[in-house]
Amino acid sequence: MRLRVVLLLAVAGVLLGAGCDQGSGEDGGQETPAASSTTSANSASSGRDSTPATTTTHSPLPTVFDRQAMQESVRKVLTESYGLADVTNVSCPSGRPVEVGSTFECAVRVAGEPKTVTITVTSEDAEYEVSAPH
Image (cartoon, rainbow, N blue to C red; front, side, top):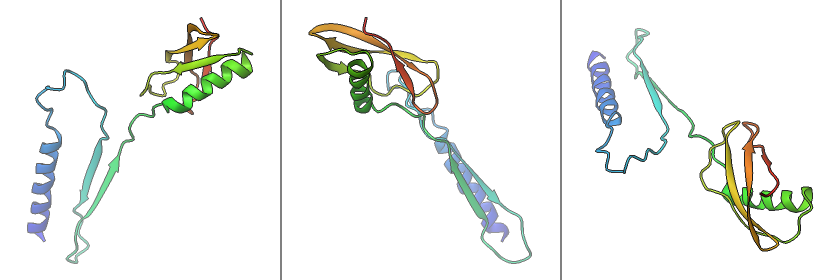
């Protein structure tokens, strides 16, 4: 029993040490968000020889907008809510996180003229406002 607990702790230490490696920094300073995990082992004994329980939890990655869905939605808002005709070439940035209060720009063409609209995130449920083209 004692050997199993020591072995389990040794394996957990090796895994923890491998997970703490910060890399060589060859990615040009770009950081990619990764899920973090927490692992714990229950070493309480009930008087029987049993395997320790292990629990793993993961933190979710930040939610990002679906670029294609947003572009279609922006076009719909411009034509239906703003009453604009000939809205084409809607292009929004990819990978934008759903963070309340954040803003970013999408490029559009209205009647052949290049314009931009400002997207303002209004809720954690990925709701946003679309400004009039400017």
